[in-house]
Image 1 (cartoon, rainbow, N blue to C red):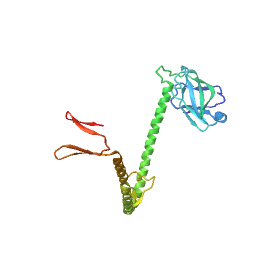
Image 2: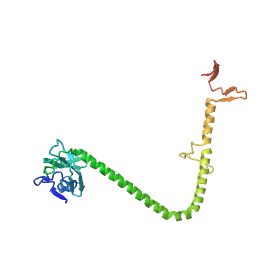
Image 3: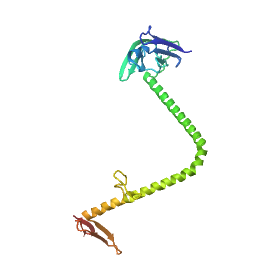
Image 4: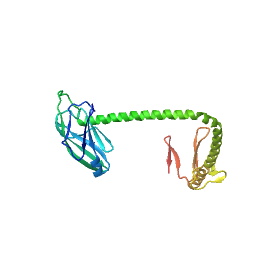
Length: 258
């Protein structure tokens, strides 16, 4: 049997009374949020509950839909008999409004127990963990369904794709060959189809001819040096007069003097 208490945010109507140690999910409190929506605008609701033995409140497990907030009462919420309180926090953008504080009465039952009861916050965290796991599972199922649908679509189009494959492959091969020829010419001499590329082209300063000219100019301005080993295994070097480096041997080690 599902027991529901229905209240508005304007008046506690004598407060809220719930049974003690209720079976999880069989008792709910439904709050009418119309007053908060009318006064502050659309927002997100959070219910804070303070049990008889607690020094601070904790977020209860709730479900918000349209203009109602449903508190799904758990065994943790009704673990201790006595008087408590609850209050709705109404978040609108960066602002926060609050409902009245509802007096809360948790009834005793004949099966009272002294067993350890989880803290309210832990119950809320456990609920979020369950929701996260359920969301992940749904996401995985959705991904699997999407994959199956995509596979079916691929199979349905496979015949059409195969019939066009030869034509498309020949066309693509020709396009790739032309593109490769243009790239090769661009990287080699900075021209394409015999026309010099313009500023902004990736080949304008990115081709073998350009770097060769740069190297030639650098060598003519700053000089150059060349090392080689002859057939006897001797190391030789040749340099232009612009290079101010001198090499000499000292104790069998090769040194350079600037």
